[in-house]
Amino acid sequence: MSKEKFQSISAADFFYRNREIAGFDNPVRATYTIIRELVENALDACEQYSILPEIRFKLVDQGNSILKIKVEDNGIGVPYEQVPYAFGQILFGSKYTLRQSRGIFGLGGKMAVLYGQITAHSTVKVLSSTGGFEKYFYELSINVPENRPIIKRKEVTPNPGRWRGTVIEFNFEGDYVRAKPKLVEYVRQTSILMPYANIAFIDPDGVLYRFDRVTEVMTKPAEEVKPHPHGVDLEIVHRMINATRSSNMVDFLANNFHRVGVATAMNFLKEVKIDPKANPKTLDAKDLLRLVNRMKEYDGFQPPDAQCLSPIGVELLKKGIMREFRPEFVEVTQRGASAYSGYPFIVEAAIAYGGDIPLTPPDEMLVLRFANKIPLLYDLHSDVAMKVIKKINWQRYKLNPATMPLAFFIHICATKVPYKTVGKEYIADRPEVEYEIEWALKTCARALRMHLAKKEKASIVQRRLTVFEKYLPMIAQFSTELSGKEKVPDYDKVLKRLETHAREIEQGSAGEAE
Image (tube, rainbow, N blue to C red):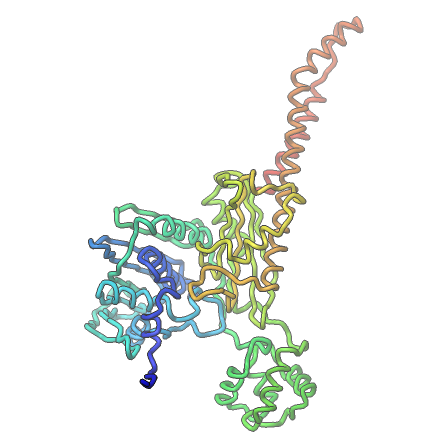
């Protein structure tokens, strides 16, 4: 009987063997995922530092199903000493903090590089600068068994123009023809959510897709926050205690947790019967477990605030929707900050009607989903947003998605989006998230119902005016003849009053649409 052979593998080796769980299961999906991951990294590098994004990327057909991708941004740049690790070490990055960001695993960009390496035997070329007097070039590959970067070549050159940003380039096995619809839709939806970005894409056929910014107003960058007591577990608290310099429990709680002050810490410790003067490092396993369990249950903690979030905002989201769909009416709403398991989140939603919105088949709906400013294009029917939309009784709002030109927009921003998979394509049906989406859509539906009611009323008034304009002169003439008088009555005042009434109703509807 042979013995089992036990061994450990690196993070890079694990994802090399299981790349399908990160969205690299075939050339079509990989083409889409690579572009999405690299563009998201570029956008994060700009937005986090309030830099108006200028993103350019290009795909070139190298033959034999090999594509070359080149992405350039004007973001903050990567520090010289960090470039090899930022692009050549799996699960290394700046995303492991409690604040809203597109990436959450430090995985996507490096997986794209790894996929290029294992399918096209390609190195990755990176040019970057933080805006100083030097720019630096690296050519890298990944040592898969050891999960570390291999530097093939590096150069440092003068940067007299103080250029700032990052350019990344490598080859990979892909299928642009079949991935094209998703790629173009991804860029279009990204421009809807970010009307302050300039995005340009040149495809392998030389076609330029360009989306110019319509505003220079940007969203507020998300700030890093401490963990909230409702969102921690035993391992997190244990790590905090090992790293803390606090000599008593009050200082430990006040210094390490989000929205916990001295008074709140004292009240909590009193309830869980832990000495406020006790050194956190002296807690035994039983006390530590009791502390963590009571943290999750205690109602005296303030809920998480939204400073770690960066929602789009009503005006910016409306600008993006108006540019792409030119609807007759659009209503956008932003819900207040809420939380699930101690993680703050905000839901933004919109319903647009008419204009360039196409009519969909009876069994389909036009639903655009976003999470942390990322368009979600796959697995629509598995997403919580679709569950909510199907649950709402739209007839109550005089709406029929099967026969009316309607588009639904749902954006969730959170420090931890409850994705169901590593591929980040659809969101789990958490009750708190489901509730916020439902009421956001209902708020928009009420506004649209009022718009349609006013539009119908204006149509009725206009039809009445048309009838009066046609027949009132005839009635006036007939009445004059019948009464034996010579002067026809002045009916202009009646017509003017009806015209004024119709105009007021029309202007009211137009004002709401704007």
